[in-house]
Image (tube, rainbow, N blue to C red; front, side, top):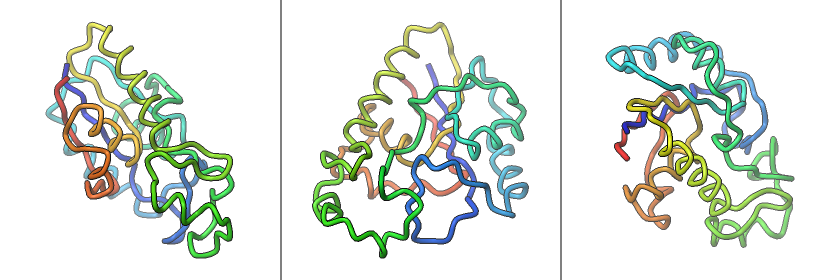
Length: 175
C-alpha cells in the first residue's frame, strides 16, 4: 500500500502561537497554496482518502477534489491542552521546560504526549493495513506525518523534529 501524507496549508495564526488541535482558519494565501498541493497530487489515483476532522485539513481535501473524505480523529495534530492558542513565550506553566526537555514522553498540561499521539497514529495505520487499498491519501498535520515517519522507520523519535514538514508538503511512503 502506498500512502500519500499531505500537510494542510498555512493557517491564519500569528507565528509563535501553539495551536495543535485548535480549529483555526486557513491563511489568506490558501487558494494559491492549495493549487500547489493539488498539482503534486494530480498524477495519483487514490482509492481511499482520509482526513483529520480539523477544518484546515478538510478544506484542503475538498479543494483537491475530495469533498467527502473519511474523517478520523486519530489523524489530528497533537493536543497541547492548556497551551493551545497561547504564544509559546507567554506560557507560564512550570511544566513547559520539562516538556521541552522530553517532548516525546512528557505531556503538555491537560494535553497528550507525542508518544500517545504516535500510538493513536499507529492504531490507525494498523487498521488501514487491513483494508484492500493500494493508494491512500491522508490530509493531516506535521506531527502526524512525523509520527508516520517514526512508525515506518524513516527516522527515530529522537530525530523526528529535525524532519521538516512545511505547509502543503506531501510525503509518499510504502507500507
